[in-house]
Image (cartoon, rainbow, N blue to C red; front, top):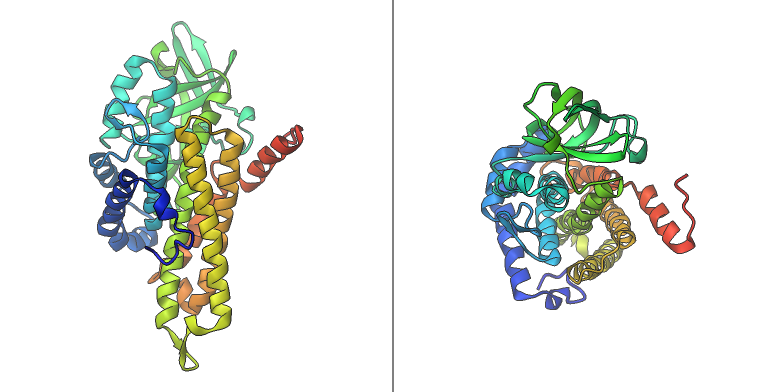
Length: 386
């Protein structure tokens, strides 16, 4: 048992869940850890290579059923996200955006023809998807999106832009959300058709091992069957975000665990004033506080996962998990850095990389402030968004 498992959460997992976790952990140890520091430093990641490897293991859309998807439980998916993010938040983002945003949107709202065309290839990692909701001037307020879709005969014509879109530079298909005369609708947009342009966002200081870009839509003409027929209104993309946020609840704990394990190893072997750092009271106090918060976060993630598997998980509950676990994971990364001292900022250790990544995780798919307001509305009955 890991020394971090103070509450014996391990005993609450099924054998199948442990096996799935072990497979993903081995993959991360073999294929991600030896290379991720270089990816981060260079600001590039072999996304297509990773997608195919993840596809072979059934990780892409693993919690969906049919169309080549594994049909795993929500808890198993969460454990996979935890192990992936223990490698790097950007690697987990590749899987989350593919499965819980792009694939989920097609799986839940697409036609049978759309599902057959895209989902098997995406599950195998042969096609990569992205999710175009955020815009340059409309991040936390998607209801104000400026991207529009208008009818022209039987076709749709899309114009606008999307910003900070994970996987956009390497995507084959984009799920684009646009305003129409009948409200927000979703469209499947192959990125290689006329009028679609993608531009990678460079000079990021966070999530550098993740391809992020802008999508520009210049009078993109789509056939009528490009629209997701089941997606009507803003609730459709927001439901996709809820699906993805559940993976973040678990994933952030992976980054925090990697920081804690690294720090425990360092503190027990690094000697100052004739004693290991771990033998000092202040160091032990820091480690104890961090381990307590990590275990609380793990219990919260497991509880939400069990609710999801029982079909009773609500969006506000996911907001509780995302707000708490990402916030605490970032605090853990920052505290771990203090124990490593100057070595904490070195690329030889993963601490600062995780901390930088978690700054983005704190913001994307709902900022902390947005989740506070979701919880506040649940508590008071009043919406503070407007």
